[in-house]
Length: 161
Image (tube, rainbow, N blue to C red):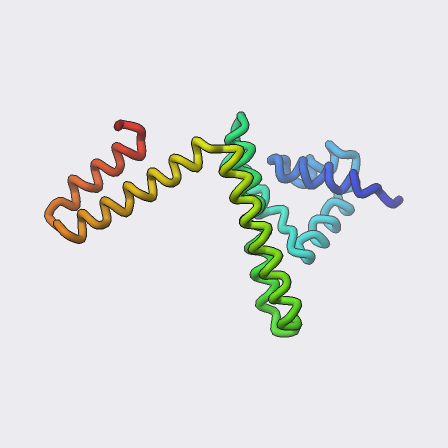
């Protein structure tokens, strides 16, 4: 029996959400053999459910920021999958160039969206980058202060400002 595309998407979401494949299949009313086949076919197309599940579980939690973290992880995993597929010497160089341009555009848009939707996280990333660069400069100029500089950076990262 053929299943609608929505069933595959429900199965994928249940699996990425943390259910083992067999339980995700039961949850969505899909035979386990179909679930295994769909998962394998998706992986062959560059959609590795295991990687998405791992990334999702790493940043799992509640709230909008965690959700956006999962979206960011998914975008980065898809970008990595595209770059891996472009290593195939059979791919036409012009097609590869188009794919890289499209990927670059998508990543830029995703970054802008994340910055707009999560301004606090964007500010923290800039602050952390600046502090890290400053500590690296301090250590390079005054190696004897390395331990104190690293301790200060750890305190800053933990919010002890």
